[in-house]
Image (cartoon, rainbow, N blue to C red; front, side, top):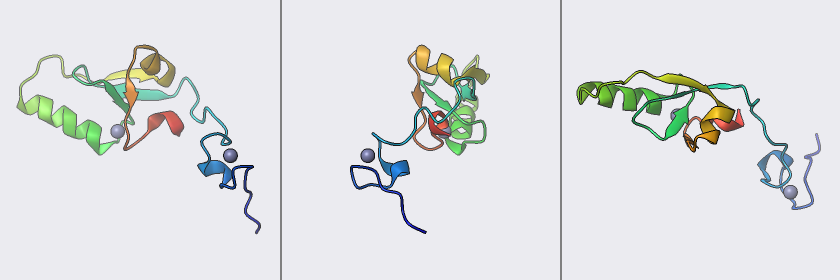
Length: 88
Ligand SMILES: [Zn+2]
Ligand SMILES: [Zn+2]
């Protein structure tokens, strides 16, 4: 099957200018820890790693908080580079 290329000669899905955005619905649920400025998918191992580290360091208020993608971006949080919840 023919590959669909954009005017930049890239696969449309790989071109940051031409691929459809936003991909994630704004009400998509993501997870944030109080000590972190990054939001995650719930099953992201980075998220679990930070949560575990906080437990070990006995940091209070270590409960993950659910937010929507829109809310998280709105308060200045960054999407995790591993699970990239903003693009799914
Ligand atoms: Zn393009
Ligand atoms: Zn993540």
